[in-house]
Length: 354
Image (tube, rainbow, N blue to C red; front, side, top):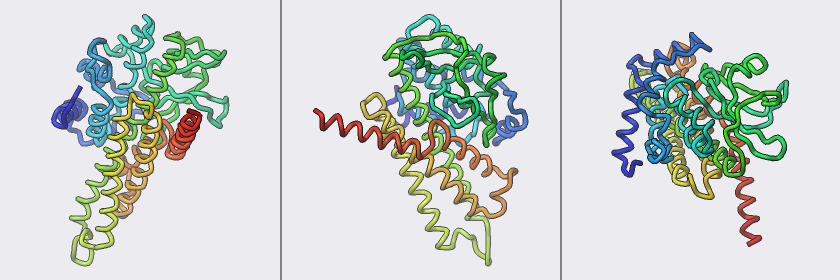
């Protein structure tokens, strides 16, 4: 969609105007107080503006944006800490459109028109009671959960209604007052959206985009925490001078800045790899780097703030919570590094075999 930094800046600013109500994180704190209830007013405006179709092609009625556009938007709005599942919603439309079925289109239409929210669950095994096999983030927002069914050897994509899971698999509150729902589809009816290897490929691509989106958001969160800390170093005085004049803190701040810029560069490079054979490895690498960087940087920010950095009333605490939550979503740093290693080994084996 966008072919210049200025156009992506306009896209980012448009999203900010929609999500920023000028309450200075007031909506984030209100969402903490009302959990698990959600306020869908802003979400209705998000749908009315057509944002869930950002990554859908223009032929399908979407914006025709690419992964680089998505990264620019999510990096640019991450500091707002909006409670809505803005990032997670962006990958749904391409996945449902890839199914090419009337049932998938109906789920998408309901979401685009604001009647319900569909979010994507990723598959994995978890050491938890009941042996869950899937997990969806921002679960308190999801009316429908799009997930994979690999039983019987064939790949199927299903839409599962929240009501089918509420009793046996309740949502679990996360440290940033979002939620995760771990669940198994055994015994769940669901609605078939599509099947076959092509749908499986689209589902895996959606997972890659979720990781890339989380990585972009982590960079944006880390940048805001870093900017807050720089401002604090300029006004907090000790021994009669601003603590930002201390060389030790200057060196730490410089290292934090370099780490954040390096992660942002890697995320942007990963966005360029989307749609290529290196997509999965690049997105996992970006997520691993952004996760480790953001958590480490925000911890440094808390330390530099001293006692005030540990208080829930101070905004930095909200950024710390969001960084920790995003870092573990869609695969933590260690899991993503393992995927990079496995993909690299497999690529080497194929190259040697050829």
